Length: 340
Image (tube, rainbow, N blue to C red; front, side, top):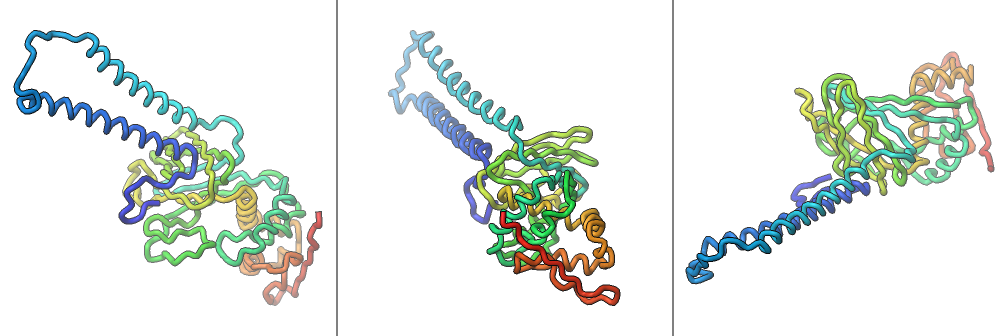
C-alpha cells in the first residue's frame, strides 16, 4: 500500500496489475512526446520573428504530404494504445481454470465473504499442510493441528463458510506481528480479510444486498461494481503472497469510508486448511463434531472453544486434557499420524 511521500504506483501482485502499470507508463511517454512536439511548433510559430527573422512564405497554400504525415502518425499511436488497452481488457476475463471462488456481498457498511469448502480431500491436504506449518509459532493465521486430527472424521462434501468483515476502529488497533493477518494501519485494518491463493486463478463474484458498492484492490488490478440484482465476476491470479489493500469505490452512504478491503494471499494448502479450520469453528461445525463424538455434547461452549483453540505442540496428540468440569471427567484422545 502507499506510504507517506510515496511517489510511484502500488507494487502489483498480479499480471493484470503489472500490465496496467506498464500501460500507464506507455501512455505517459506518448503524452509527453506529443506535448513536447506540439509545444515546440507552437512556440516556433508564435515567436517566428525570433526564430525565422520574421520571414514568412505567403505563396504556400497547401502541403499534402505534410497533411498526410500529421494524420497518419497520430493514428498510428492511437492504434497502438488501443491494441494494448483491448489486450489488457480481455485478459481480465475469468475464462477457464478457476481453482478458488469467493462470493463478495456489499452491505451498508461492511463486506461479507462466502466460500465453498470441500472436505473430500481433507486427509492429503491436512497432513501435508501440518508438516509445512509445524515450525510456525503463534500468530492468528497459524495452521491449527486440529485439522490433522479431524482429517478422518465424517467431514465430507461441501461446506459453506460465511463471515463479515468490518473496519477495526482506531482505538482498537494493536501492534501486529509477522504472523498476523492484521496490518495495524489506521482506517484500513479489518476484522476478517478476504482469502485468495497465489499461483492459481481465483474468481471473485461481487454483488450487493442493498445499494451500489464497488469492490476494488489496486495492487491486484481489479475493481467491480456491486449492482443490485446483478453479480459481476473478476479473475484474480496473484503471483506472490502477502496483504493487499483496497476500498469501496462507490459512494454508498454515510459509512462509505468505513468499508476497507484486506486481501490475504497465501498458498493453496494454507488457504484450504484455514478455510476448513474456519468451518470447524462455526456453530454448524461444532454441532457436527459433537454428533461424531457424542462425548463432546457434554462440553459447554467455553470448553469446546478451548479445545478448538489450543496450540498442540505434539502432532501425535489431537486433544489434551479438557478443562476441569463438574459434569465431565478428563478426556484424552490420542490419534496416531498416518505415515502415508
